[in-house]
Length: 312
Length: 267
Ligand SMILES: Cc1cc2nc3c(=O)[nH]c(=O)nc-3n(C[C@H](O)[C@H](O)[C@H](O)COP(=O)(O)OP(=O)(O)OC[C@H]3O[C@@H](n4cnc5c(N)ncnc54)[C@H](O)[C@@H]3O)c2cc1C
Ligand SMILES: Cc1cc2nc3c(=O)[nH]c(=O)nc-3n(C[C@H](O)[C@H](O)[C@H](O)COP(=O)(O)O)c2cc1C
Ligand code: FES
Image (cartoon, rainbow over all chains, first blue to last red; front, top):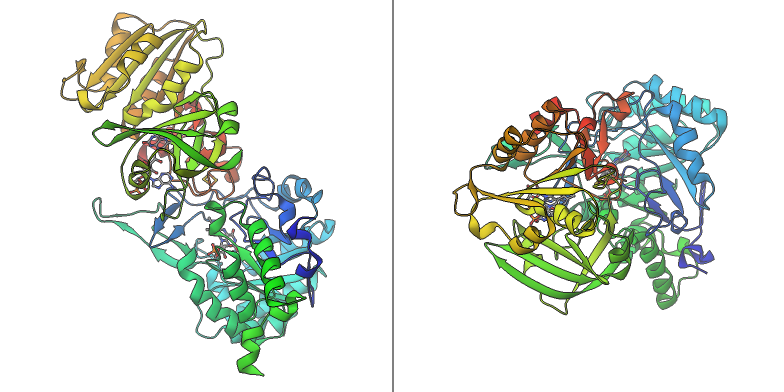
């Protein structure tokens, strides 16, 4: 048996039910099958597919990525083929693998989110819908919604009315009080909280004196954001009992444990896929060994362990 | 595609910050074709660095690179017997001579890498092979004897005239065609700095010569999952196809596939 299928790694909290706690963060693992030679989809508890919009989107002009300060800034800008081609072309090929599928949905208006949800609901092809209100790379919507509790409430309520598919809300780190946003979502029927998306960032070439990204601004991710992401997971855990998916800078099983201890129920890997494509398998193996060594028999015992020491 | 910890068989410093490294990776060596690249983890830099496959020798592959910044400088300091973490072979768009009768190869600097591999791989093919290889000066033109052996005609071009013709490689190409006009069955293959590529594509298209170009772009994953490496596409069917991924649809593409206006503006 592969570590990824070890029953001790099961996640079973509220609407979040996964065979293991490792998820691929949206936008960093394509549509799940591209790297199967080295990173098999079944290593993952769930795969969050690249963000989709109602209409096809070109995305931002290149260059779209640059390495800075131990992390990266990306400005992909939600390039995708739109909802109409999504289910047939992107979801179906992944269906034959034993991993949960998460659709990451995006809009420039609240109606966009409702429309996409309607379509996803019609053929019930995905296991979770992740409402992305935190993309820093689009001019309209995106992170602007995620900073505003009223907008979050409105979008979550409308999406909820359209479907029984479990709903996740993907949060931006760019808020003063993450609890306020979480409560707005929880009051309107959100099932799961996922955080964090990237930090808005700019890098400039001092020789050409031009921005290094075609879009000027992008979103910062990778190892340097980890401690800040853990802080937000801790805050989220203090604000809600809903299941939490923690992400931001995870590059090893030790990082995954740290997120779990702070209050996450599952974790997602993003940027590190580009460095170690087989990271999911390594995290699952590391978690199993950690559980052996520290005598944990379920993942739930680890989740929030440290947080509880200071909050109960 | 495979991720492998490969043992370094040899490191050769070629001079002027250029290096040649051979690493043992049987799977990659077996499947490598001209145009393929690898993505190498370089010490403490985060993203892997893409490098073209330059040669295959038994179960080893060779890479030919210039130490530019942190990543490639780290690589240049490796010694035989050490290990490097490689992902490859990557890329789907490859050099393909099809039924070309005369293949004109235009290389600039380290852009020689995939074209060298092409010449070696297709040594026995029927096509006539003409190489234009440009560099700054005589010290940065490498593998002269092998290149002369592998081609029917071989022109070296240096900016200062210290070896071969003086000037730019695209000017030399133009001059060649003034004497020997384009023929049916001609095919241009090129790789090098963007400024050079721009000239070569413009020339090829104005003369109606098919042109396969190996491009570079800043890459995240190298495997098609991050959408970072994109190039503007000519005549997209819908907005979602306005840019194509260089890592999976290239790195070698038909010049007709590129939206030249946008691409030339970028470079
Ligand atoms: C498909 C492909 C094949 C290549 N083949 C060769 C080759 O055979 N020999 C060779 O010498 N060079 C090759 N290059 C270029 C090589 O990848 C860069 O020189 C190298 O990434 C520089 O890294 P650095 O850390 O040394 O320099 P840095 O100082 O980090 O960067 C210098 C420049 O290199 C480029 N670069 C940096 N990181 C990346 C990245 N992750 N992806 C792409 N470009 C990047 C950027 O333009 C940057 O401005 C190839 C590039 C591509 C895309
Ligand atoms: C290239 C790239 C593309 C991304 N695309 C999306 C996206 O489409 N939707 C989304 O919700 N998040 C997207 N993200 C954010 C990641 O899912 C994740 O939240 C963030 O990168 C933090 O995790 P990390 O530090 O492990 O990368 C993207 C990140 C990167 C690096
Ligand atoms: S480098 Fe990630 S898609 Fe090409």
